[in-house]
Image (cartoon, rainbow, N blue to C red; front, side, top):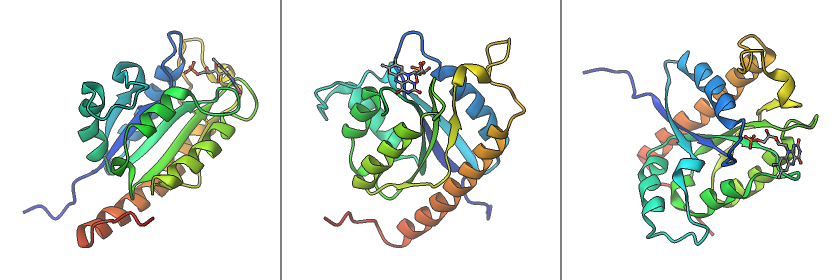
Length: 194
Ligand SMILES: Cc1cc2nc3c(=O)[nH]c(=O)nc-3n(C[C@H](O)[C@H](O)[C@H](O)COP(=O)(O)O)c2cc1C
């Protein structure tokens, strides 16, 4: 019998649903970073495809379809642009559609925007929201300020940049929490206390 634990299941949430969005390129860069790691497998959850209802109806088929993918994740990374100094409404809808699926799990962030803050204001707002959902936001995030300047002539984010090191630090922190919480929950189920 193998003594190696199953890799962490990381759900990467694509936090933009605009037609002309940059999000897929950012996600593509990020999944390349994760592919270099043996300790994680990835499930990319695209909120454009998910089409979650603003009604937040828990019986809606779109909500039900996504539920097991979120419930089965050991941790999350939200790839999020900054819209008007916060995060897009489609991300809030996704968060609000679920409850226990977020509980006692770590959340990391990749943010970007046209301004010099690199989406940091979106991330700080998300930390407040995820705290309400008993999720643990990891300290370090990856930011792409003035995001258009990061793209090479091929339309992709460059492979060599400080962002790769930042992604590794964020993922290492996220992995620590995910292993710790997975272990703790195997001994004692997490019960959300009000
Ligand atoms: C409604 C809206 C509001 C925006 N507000 C900000 C902002 O407050 N700060 C910023 O840095 N960029 C802002 N931007 C620029 C976006 O962060 C940038 O266009 C980014 O590419 C959006 O991500 P997406 O293309 O994946 O949707 C805004 C864009 C939109 C559409």
